[in-house]
Length: 256
Image 1 (cartoon, rainbow, N blue to C red):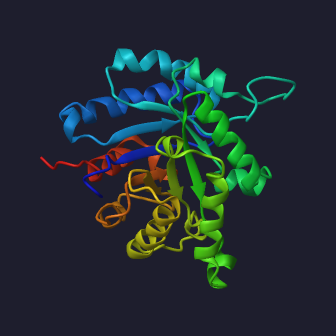
Image 2 (cartoon, rainbow, N blue to C red):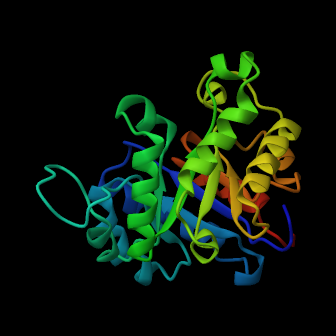
Image 3 (cartoon, one colour):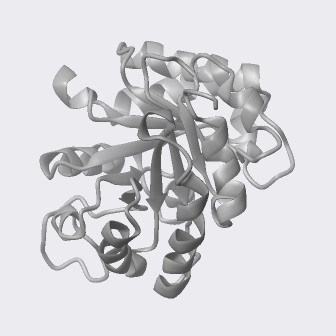
């Protein structure tokens, strides 16, 4: 962690949790965080399925939590004949603050490209949403020695046409695709190296960059000890309040 950038721990629930299950999660996690002061806490974000977001929006003020809400995807257009899509304007109605854009699963299964990622980023910014932009290489690309060039290309394509002021609104997440759910491990120092490369490509020391390759309670300490890593975009370990709390605890800037 870098003390000049506040850590962010973001749970990406993917296609898990009904609205009722999401509310039960908030109810379970909230008392775990009550003993800690705001200045000790990282930013905490829950990226839930669309169907849960309006219910969570209603529940968070009652729970008196400082969680932020995030969406897992959005359409680049504000409205139109795009059956099944969700726009940034719709997300803002539920006080959503962040949106994941370009997740590896969206790129692989739903044909997202660098061009659509860039368009979605611009639409999110126009509606005052903070994009969490995902980049990362496959196993084949890593084994071919293409990691650095590929990741830098994705970063440059994502930020094409953005002003320095807009860049300040972004969060990036490095996802080594080969380390997600495969049993393979991206060592902390290598994750830190690639995230440093992303920061250099951005030419901005203020943008927070998360690690998104199977962060878990048993590896979070080593990852968060790295100077370039500002938090996590967490899948499986964010589904249970107990394991997600352990990740939040490891990202606390001040230990008590």
